[in-house]
Length: 493
Image (cartoon, rainbow, N blue to C red; front, side, top):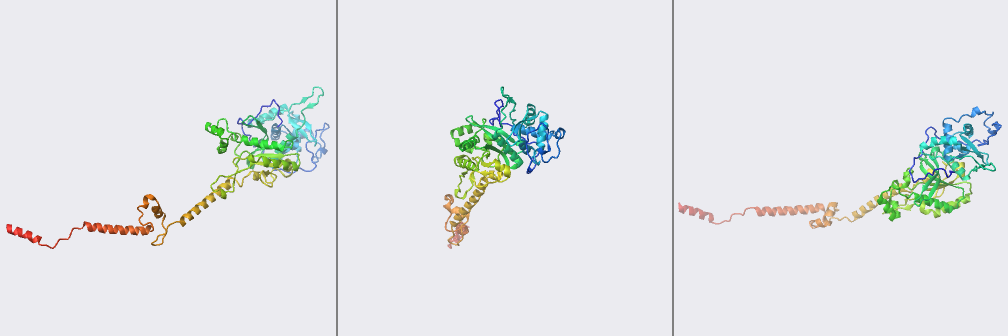
């Protein structure tokens, strides 16, 4: 989140490795924290007393809290390496949400502090300490995260005022806290593993502008392969949120640098031609997996530390001024009247919620609202498109079948009837009397095929009789010519 000028910038104009999931630690089901547990208390020099935690009856010695080894040590270092700063409550939800409270996390942090891996940076107004990595802990976090392709946040070093000696840069940005808390609530609900989160991921537009996402979550096991999150504390004008939405929409329409020249030239001459380019051939697919749904990468606006009225006003502006970027279109179909499905392929799915709802009801509850819809749904239900492509295919198939039935009925109504026997013409006979090449040999066009066959049989029989009659020898005539011959022979002898 909070980065320094010395930190190397990571943008999405160069492909990177997708964050993997640590198989050794599977998040368990969340449980409700017991009342009266004070999380993230400031460490006292006089030692820890039982009053610090009502679940403990006796004071713990340093030996009793040296448990930050193996998986637990790795979990905390990874979480602080990704989010840079966090309270014990946030780290509890990001690492072991199945525990009843954050006491074990606080003990582990104290143990890591003894090993010079972490240090408390400040104490918040709610008396929860904010912990950061030391230089030694930051180096170990790099070894745990960088081989997995996960960006490590910048090291927060201690800097003091040269005159007053006051620690500089120790303020905890409320926006950064809201981002970490949002990730923690998602993790508790099983939406994303700790290593599936990334913060401050840059998306470079065609004009060189870089739009940074506050949080990126990858949770394919929860039905959310990828989602971008913008955390807003209403410190920005609602129209600025529309501009962010527009930028994500534009980034989703970019082509990679090695795209086919023919495609690049076509899109340059006709910008709308990008809509006919498959998503697999666009830039965003080089960095994010398929969403499993139509459209571009989903975007979530999480509002924090604000009023319900301000949230409603911001959502209204997003719906009205950002309609071009999130709204689906009508399908271009031959059966326009029969198709009610909507085309989401070029839209950015946008969902909204508040951090307070996530903390009160859980991120897995019906606390998400999709722009263009009324009411709240679960996250996967809000991202799904029940009126999208699958409905379109079903409606088009039904409309096509109905059109074929209608055409067949109309054709059947026009089928000729034999004037001799009253039977309907067969398809072959109908074609015979209508096709120009065969119509001249069709004979009587008012009779069906069998009747026409009878006519042909009679004609052939008559013709055969005439042929046979013409080929027969003539009958001898009744005259005296034979006697005349015999007489000639008699006189010669």
